[in-house]
Image (cartoon, rainbow, N blue to C red; front, side):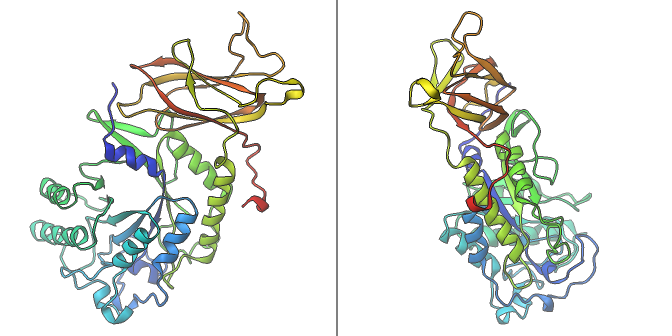
Length: 421
């Protein structure tokens, strides 16, 4: 059964690619893990050259449209001067206790036109209020969330990570009501979710599309992953940074399957993105634009006379010596999912130039791809073929199916020459 996305969910999917910044007290205690309960004194927090503008500028140049900062992780350390905590930037030596990482991050996002996201861990093992006192802890929780959603302007996305909550019974209804009252336009990850976790931290979603349905509710999928092998601790796994080739694959397995990609980069103890990570992020952005920034010169998608068929053609007609044809190995399709996705099976056909295939036996040319759902975006790869005419056949649909765009590319082997980066 089709379920329709909300306007907030459609806009979220249009963001496509976001960058996660795990930064906090853990950034200064290399080798610590999420729940080891090893002390991390607030005196250790001192990012002498913190520059959130550098983080966000590089993410934006790489093609990201949204960014998320860990406002508070499982250790309980608050990246803003919370009046509900004695374990925050206000108790640190950084900027004489007058600094505010959240403020600098939010301002940087707005400066570079990025959507603003904040991560908040509902559970914690450190900090001011014991987690094992539920009612007191919920008041503390609500107090901090109210600060974040009151003092920093519009927040586009709030990311709850319920890892470590155990048997704790949160007053979820009250918490969600407070959030939605303070920020009606916000998107939530976690409770009363607007976005679904993909189920892994590897940056992949399975076929057929990048969304799921929970109790009949449409939920776009977000595929989170790490640039290295840990969320923090960039200095402890410096040799594990992902290649441009792998990152391109992650993008195709997430955005190219109708979801969003959320790539984590952990700023270092300087308060800057590590040099290697910053360079790799920019390389990835250049490679992504080289691969998908310039579609081949086919016209806009148009419905054919035959019901359920859509076509694109090159601007030049068929001429001798193959003029007006293109080598194609990738087709990107976008479906109109405002009322829910409709396509259940589809095929892509290409007409070869010498024998166009317009005959009773083979009226549509060569079938190069068979797929299931399309969703917001489907990237379809197949062996290279020369053509000037591409058709998408909707084999099976639930209701009326409408395509917003069909674009063709020649990706080749996937190697992107350094000169093009």
